[in-house]
Image 1: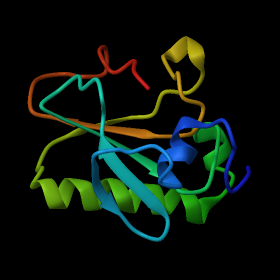
Image 2: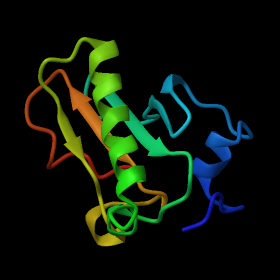
Image 3: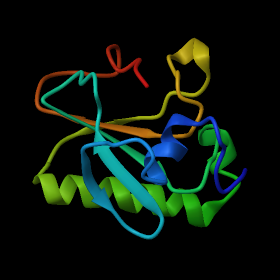
Length: 118
């Protein structure tokens, strides 16, 4: 785990080098609308620090808790009573950006079969 990885898209978003449609941020996480949404609400929640995937994130319970709190904050701010949260781990699961991120999806049906983005 590193604070930032130079060629990581999401680290560049955290650093403000690449613009994103931010919907929530705090000291530990950033959340933004997915550029290829799979549902009416499709927000990505990422830690500011670089973790490759959820298995690496799980080794830092405080960082993992911050991501979960970020998911809760996004759901609260969006007024989501029901939503799906997905973490893809590895290219075979559809993870194309190797910076752990949670997909928060809401607004139409079952998402898990369709959330292979970012």
